[in-house]
Image (tube, rainbow, N blue to C red; front, side):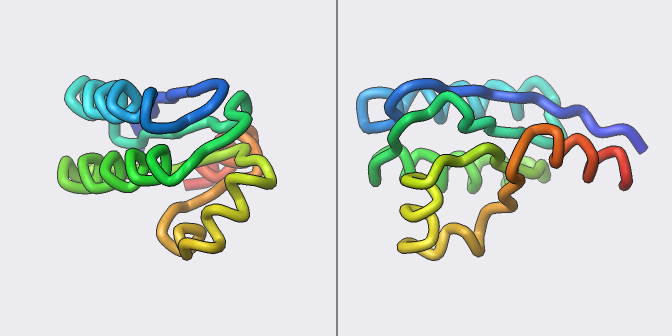
Length: 107
């Protein structure tokens, strides 16, 4: 079974100024028929609570549509933020995009 995977790759600082656009981008991908939305954090240098809030709202949007949201390539700061807020238990996190692709290929 093949999945429609859409990838979003934000960059720089993910904070309140970018949160609305970030959420809208994910909503657009779901409306376009994505089964899986992969957020690649490779180019994100910092994420604050507004960015995390946007990510949680995006997760709710994706799940409501019956799709899946996964993240990959988080840096140390984002990993710590996820752990402090227990979001590391909510989101499926892959170390790299390649690790995600390998998992997808094996299903």
